[in-house]
Length: 103
Image 1 (cartoon, rainbow, N blue to C red):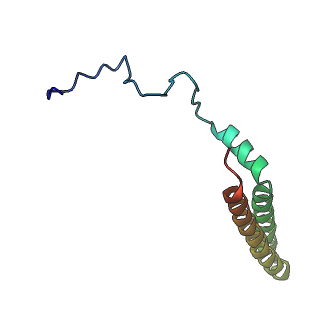
Image 2 (image 1 turned 30 degrees about the vertical axis):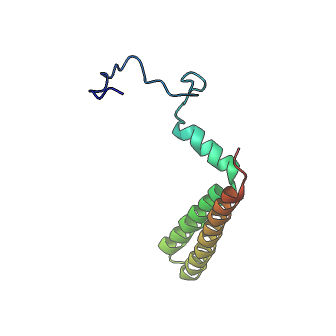
Image 3 (image 1 turned 90 degrees about the vertical axis):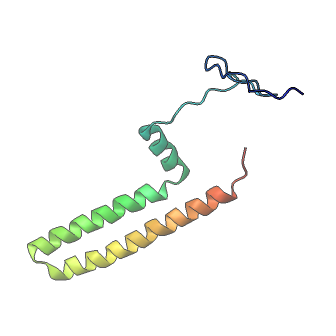
């Protein structure tokens, strides 16, 4: 083998890699809306929990502003339960995704 400098890199011609076909697949970056829709289909309980948490929080703040402290306190407790549901849904989704066989 002759020891010498490597050949210059030509950016218009990628290096040859055995078994690699550059046009065999096209990588397309997923947009926000597409990714959100895919993740919602994979685990629909997380967005439901988030909306529930936001709804209970909003209603609790409205009750607090109106001076209904008992109802506001109950809504803050319900918010904690809704947050717990959302966290549990996240954990279940991660576990299910981890246990899925890879294609």
